[in-house]
Structure formats: C-alpha cells, structure tokens
Image (cartoon, rainbow over all chains, first blue to last red):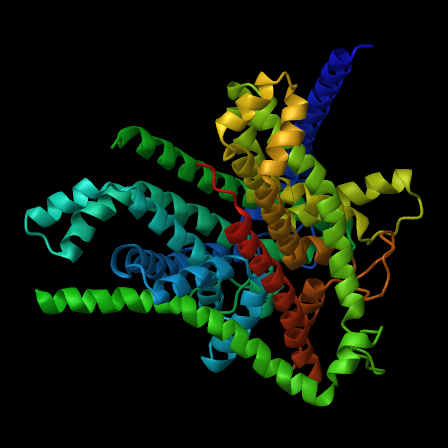
Length: 285
Length: 291
C-alpha cells in the first residue's frame, strides 16, 4: 500500500469518526428529548397545570411553581435590564481606555465564570439575611439579576460596538449631546443585539435551580405567591423535589414539568434567534 | 443641559459599579464566614482530614472527599467532552459542507440552553439504568452517569470555542499545507491544531471550571455520600451538592453547619477562579498573532 493511500484511508476514517461524533451530540439531544416526552406527555392536562403540589402524585400540579417562575422572570428582568444595559453603555461609551476600564473588564469576565451556586451564597448572606428579605421572591430575583448581569453587559457592549462611527459623528455634528446621541441613535441601532442578549439571559435565569435553593426558596409551596415578599418555589426546584422522591408517580410529574419548562426555554431562545436574524437582515451598515 | 448629562453619566457609572460590588461581595462573604469557620476548625484539618461529616454527631471537616467527588465527576465529563468537542470542531471547520454546519451548530447550542435540572433527570432515569445493563455493580447513585451527561452538556462549550480558535488560523497556513499535498487529516492535526493550541486549551480549562461548578446534575444523580474515592460506580458527593444538601434542610445561622457551606463555597470559588484566570492568561499571552 502506498503512503498516499494510507494517508487517504486515515483521512476518510477520521471523517467517519467525526460524523459519528457530531451525530452523537445531535442524537443524544433528540434521544433525551424523546425520552422525556415519552415519560411525561401523558401527564400534562388541565388538572396538572392548575393544581397545587400534593403528597399524592396524581393530585399534584405545578401552579405554584409556574407562578413562582413568572414572578422571578418579571422581577429579574425589571432589576437586571436597566442595570446591565446601563453598565454596558457606561463601559462602551463613557469609560474610555483607562486603568479603571481594564479593571471593569477583567472583573466582568471573571464574574461570568463564577459558579451559579456561589451567587446563591452571596444572595443568602446579602439579600436574605443582611437586607432582611428572607427566602422571598425579591431575594431570589436580586440574586439571579446579579447572575445574569455579565451576560447583559457583554451583549450591550458588543451591540454598541457594532454601530458605525459615522452615525455617532453625524449626531454630534447636528449638535446632539452625548446622552441624546446614545438615546436617539445608538440604542435604537443596537437594540436588536441587546434584546437578543436580554432574552437569552432571562431564559437562562428561569432554568437556574441551585442559587435559588441556597437563597432559601422552598421545595414545598402549597399556595400561589401573590407579592414579591412571599415565599416561593420555581419550576426547576419543583422538578428537583419530584425527582428526589421514591414514588414512580412523581418521576412522571417531574417529566411533565420538564416538558413545560423546556417549552418555555425553547420559545424564549427561538424568539431571541428570530429577533437576531430579523435585525441582522434589516440593518446593513 | 450640562447638569443632566452629568447626572446621567453618574447613574450609568453606578450601574457599572454594581458589577464590581458583586465581586467584592462574593469575596467578602466567603472570607468572613469562612474565617469564623476556621476559628473552630484548623486549616490543617480542613485540607488533610479524609472525612467530611459536619452533619453527624462525630464531626470531621476534611474537604478532600468533596473535592475528590468534584474532581472525579468533572474528570469524567472532560474525558467525554474533549474528544467529542474537538472532533466536532475540526469536522465543522475542515470537512463539513456549509449547509450541514448551519444545521448542526444551532442544534448543539440547544444542548447548552437546556436547564441543568433536566440533565439530572436524564442521568438518573435514563443513563444510570442503561449503564447498569452493562455494569451490574453500578449503584443507583454514582459518579459515572452524571459525569457522562455533564460531558454531553459541555460538548458545545468546547466545540464552539475550539472552532473559533481553529477558524482564526490564517488561510495561508491551511493552503500551504494543502499545497504540499497533505490530506485534510494531516492539515487539521499537524498545522491547525498546533496553531490553535492556546485557544483549544482555553476552551478545555473553561469547560473544567464549568463542570466543577455544576450543581444540579450531580445533586440529582451522584448521591450525597462524601467519600474519598475515585471509583466511579459508587455514590459520592461534590462540593456543590453539599451546599445544596445543607440549604435544603433547616440550618440555623451562626452554627458550624451553616459556616461549612461558606468554607466549601470558598474552596470551589478558589478552584474555578484559578482555572478561569489561568485561561485568561493563556489567551492573552499565547494567542498567536499572524500578520
């Protein structure tokens, strides 16, 4: 066998191995979505959607966890979006190249790599204890806001960076102040990327379990929370609670709740991607 | 008008300061609670004792069993994610038709968007029973299946970061290699991978750090029994699982049990902080600049 032939065979073999690896990644995703749908789809009905948790798996439902997740989603958005976008604008438009700027930058990269459970410890000590919020929805939302802040800051900065200089200069030339330029020119032009980043980060927030457990969210909540100071649970914690129980019925409840959680996550991801594509097509500099 | 501009600037700066305060807050609470902990327990016992039993009557405070659990599960995850992730990166970069790339990349990204509690369910109810048919001695809670599932979860992290690194290798290098008659395989492994090595290393370090901080998969499927072992078939406990375990129960503030989660958290934070910063350093220092 000539050397050329052997190299050719190695090349082809690797190609097949690589196709196998890629298929493994994609197939395990499908397998695992299929497995969960198979387990849980039969359990999803009106009773399941509107019932409180129960000691009997057939009577249990996700209404308290579902409402808890909605509360967390809305409050986290209210807290994290202005702060994150504001910080992004400051770093990109005001800070300039300085020592302080470098420090900010290193700090944000580092925060993005901190395990989410550590944010839980921060929330437990600062929001739940020091600020006396206890295991409330507000304490949970504050904690998750800090968790997703780096993502929103980075998305804001990247989008502002992509706005061409000419737009800025044109605005200044017409006599606009810095803030007018940002508010009326840069933010609208960068909105697609910023909104995409915000939705993706919120999708991540509602999938988080560990930080909320640490802050003090409950595993068993037999009521629907009605204000930000109420104690609460969220869908991932409810799922964790059901998985941890020995009865087979609760595993089915868990699978059903997972389907609903995944639906919410995928819809949010889908909206984000749709928004990004639409925006990329519309805006051509 | 001037005044308003200034106020806005200060407000925006305040937003930026929140992120700095977060970092200081994390370091401060970990150090302050852990320092109280280390008044009762010597650092020597924490680092060398081979038992972790703060919730029992006979208390021992050795972090090693938890650390072993964390290292074991992350190690298994990397053993799965590195070969798959790197091969996928090379395949998408050098072999795959553009059309396929457009389909596969978003699908892999979905893997990263799935909440981790869902992976835990998958590990416990699907992978463990499946493994038990091959390995009958595998217990219901073990390090193996959460490790594997965690590996699948971080495949997209390694593949997309490595792909970026491979993509950044200049075309001229690639073309020179093909011009010499090299195959795609030779070009990939003898030219592109060495040229992109720093980027690939960064992706692996970040993946390890991510795996160490991962909580729900191991909390659900690996068990809650801290033990100093590298046997992947028996129940173990990771640092993150321990924090969750204590948080699920009723532990009073000020007790030694309460302080242990901060000491454990400090160990975890230290590890991931170190890994993250080594990878930033590598990225800065070794990223080759091609003219």
